[in-house]
Length: 104
Image 1 (cartoon, one colour):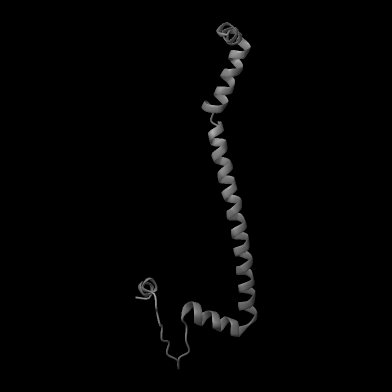
Image 2: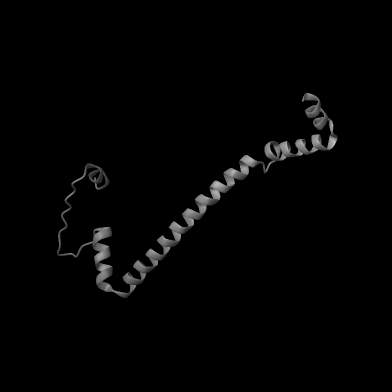
């Protein structure tokens, strides 16, 4: 049994092939572990890309609505930036403590 295994490994072509495979899998700069890590990063980048494409489409729609409708622009300014007319007063009712820290 050991003689057969030893005879196989004594062959220089098998030895060189095994050495090459070990070198590619472990020691090369593009080894197997780095390729797996790069594949994971690529998958995450693809997920991020779809998220940002959807976000861009949503923002383009909102921008189009704001530029074409003055009532929508006023509503957006009042809700997002707490803008008011000169004759108005704004009262903020904050129910959550974490939101209260933002407006102090």
